[in-house]
Image (tube, rainbow, N blue to C red; front, top):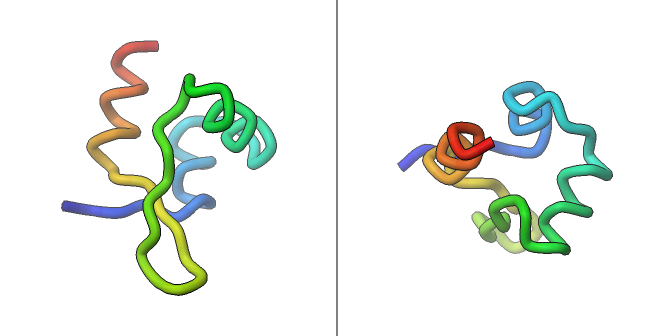
Length: 54
């Protein structure tokens, strides 16, 4: 399983930071997962699936 950090997600999807977090909040974008005490990332498979559905 590969994880993507926010800058990678932004480049891959073309979305801005604020758009990503707004869409996570309203449930229209995959939620991030904790990968450390102060670090989060997104599962690459979740992002790719979301992109196919759009």
